[in-house]
Amino acid sequence: MQTENTVSLEVEIERILPGGVGLAHTEGMTIFVALAAPGDRLTVTIDRVQGNVSFASIKEILTPSPVRVEPPCPYFGSCGGCDFQQMTYEAQLANKAEIIRDCLRRIASLEKPPDIAAVPPPKEWRYRARATWQVDQEQDSVGYYERASRRVCDVADCAVLVPVLQTTLEQVRATPPDALPDGLKHIDVVVGDDGVSLAPEFADFHTSEVSLKVLDEVYRYNAEAFFQINQDLLAPVIATALPNVTGETALDLYCGVGLFTIPLARRFSRVLGIEANPVASRFARRNLQQAQLGNSRIFTSTVTEWLRANVRTLGSVDFILLDPPRAGAESTVIKSILDLHPKRISYVSCDPATLARDLKKLLAGGYTLDSIAAFDMFPQTHHVETAVQLISEDIS
Ligand SMILES: C[S@@+](CC[C@H](N)C(=O)[O-])C[C@H]1O[C@@H](n2cnc3c(N)ncnc32)[C@H](O)[C@@H]1O
Image 1 (cartoon, helix red, strand yellow):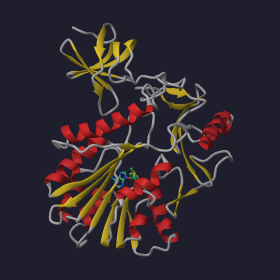
Image 2: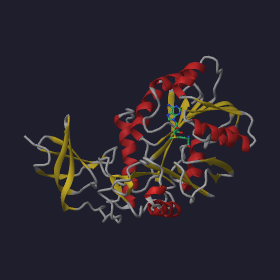
Image 3: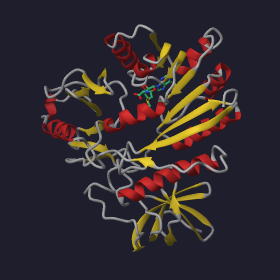
């Protein structure tokens, strides 16, 4: 019997799975190997066994994958932030597209998922405009959690941060301990065209809120509200998520500070945005007001609660955009969407597995897949953004 961390096994990586691990089989075991590349021949050690699956770490690279490269970041492997630096960028893109297709096949039960080419951003490094930095004041460490741990990896230079955030990281690291807020455990940071916002606020190298212009619309926000990490891809994501659609009523579920609400409000007579975080919903209201769009309303509520209270009185809805967090939409939300039966649904997702789970229900509920596009918002990690368009079978 295998015991954890005592036995070395030789494996060959078959492919990369959703979650970013490499899949291998040997001696009747299914093994998930962290930081692997497809085609690697490796010696691995088992860290943990969960049900039928063993989770393993690389001990030695016997034959490197043809797409394996030397990870350039000195923290790679110990920092929990990036897990794809061991592959060429082309291989990262190809594997992300395959991860999405794998989820569509296995989870959404689509027999022949369409070919997908993940759209790359202009920058593979120094793209990240929002981050959460963990702080361990006893160890004097600022950075990200270590892999599979709650210990803080002390990071002086993060190669995926936009330059202005790298400078902010250095300013935070140079702040004397007695100038940091008591009990500080983590810092949220976000960039705009006009500066950096920090939560919690301290020192003087930031502003209380920032703004960003995307496709001629201006969005204000701060580090307490969600904003997309990769600002260079926002214009194509918005254009894809909102194809040539117009009509009477549209819903923007999980609307954040209104990234999609504003362009929707230019195309529909009435737009209702739902957002649980009161800081984000306040910004969304202000952003609509600044854009002089009086045809939209933002509700501070969970989507589940709001739909439960309003689904029967809403009347006809033409278009629903949903952009939920990684966990996807709650099953009651999918049920309410099917009850409302809009002509079109636009689903923006940062997790292909939960997207596929929700798509399966929507496809079974009377919708067909119109288009699917992927955007590499998060180079050097296994994460990928997907935008799916669905059309009601009544009109398709
Ligand atoms: C992936 S973000 C998308 C935000 C926005 N669409 C954008 O692109 O900037 C998900 C948003 O859902 C909000 N949220 C999370 N759980 C929620 C829930 N149960 N009901 C409503 N909003 C929720 C988060 O605060 C966050 O703003």
